[in-house]
Image (cartoon, rainbow over all chains, first blue to last red; front, side, top):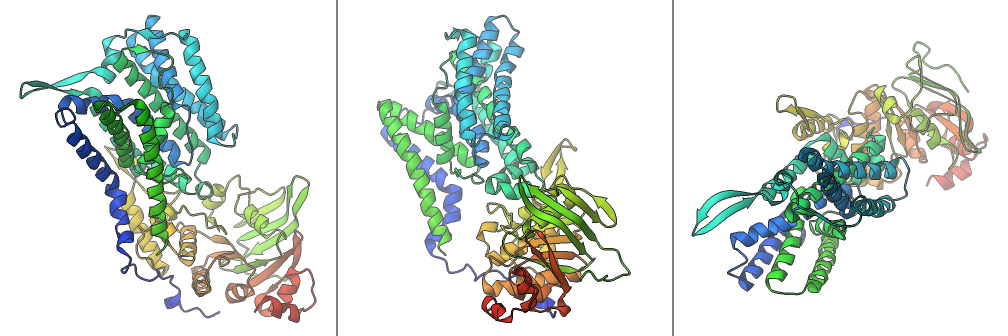
Length: 346
Length: 267
């Protein structure tokens, strides 16, 4: 039993100095790749529509149109970080929106009606979380698919399947209010409230995921759920909170959309769960969990918005938008696959 | 075979009459185990002999069906690994139980994260900087060398991961560390370093239970070895009173010397 303490260390492998250029550039592209894509897209659109694209009105339009998707996407991101999925967010958006619109029409005071949308979202997300953990659904896909139908059905049921229009200004504030900044070159410059709100929400999610114990545990669960469990982390409770957050954000998206359209319509948000998943994947999150940054998701949402805006400005049919978004999803994941090959072959 | 050892002290951990049933299957039948402070005990047995199940009972992952655990002179029962860990019983799992997407420091303190208060105590944040500082100091203390504690665990070699897993197990006043096949997944040149790390734990007065198939490991680090066979105690001895051939015989369920087989097994 002779062990020399001096030799008992575990040493790092050979130094990483002489790596090929491609490998050394990986961290750079990880960090700035999405920014480069956004700038490139913006440049192309500006070249095609120099008068319209960079106008203040168009820029704020992009933010107004992408705000709801931004809310869904950041909630979806937290779920995907745990290697989960939430297919119900589009329906939950509609459920929140209809609860708000119907209760408003029934004479419920606006502060209550306003709060009902996120609260319905929170409740739906909580039920998702309970189903996935306590009812031991084999995959979040199943539970949230069930919720997709249930929430949509409920949204139709409470509204009788018809839209409700006309909401009081305080409820519309988040989705449609603008802050007047002044007049420049003869045009009135307004800043949409929802733009500031989106920035604030993404900042708060950055704090949550990068700088709280809860956030780090979300990443750990995505990386290795067994490791999280044996480390004493209450994985079930964390997952329930994660799905509740995602549902809550869907309810916020419902509030924003109600404000923007000045109405509630029960088929709102149809298919938006897929747009949110697309934004998260384009934003660099891994479907296997544990990977991705809040800023990347913001970029993913912006890219989705830029594609739609750019194609609309150039009068390209929405069918082409779908083809393009599909192609970009495949391309984004393929780039990630290549990146990983490069990263593991040294 | 149950000769009293180190009579002056009480055992750190005593398991008596441990049974574990999984439905109709009996995984452990009346298993006894004693572990003394600062002792390294090797547990051997063939696949399915119950070694891993016994370790999971001791670490609180699977509560025993029958039998008692006495830790530090007091009867204890664990509803979760966390309760065992609160007493200073840590487990290093065979599959290492590290999150590859997180850095070394975060892995070491996973589940027991350092925090700091901001905004006058209204908000508690994860303290990256303290975690990194503590991890650096802890690894230096254990003479584990890594490029940086901010490296992601998936970038490490098998031996480095095992070292991080062991470092993690003793990050907070561990008194007993249970290791399931700590060298099984390692490159040959890394095995010795991990074994020396285990010897280092012993020098710090930490008791270690180690499951291993490798006789070289057992005979390098252990003070005593016990064999399970078909879920029951089969034999045990101090290391100096036994031989590789005998221990391999125990694994196969015989108490006769099987030197020839030993040479086949340990090349």
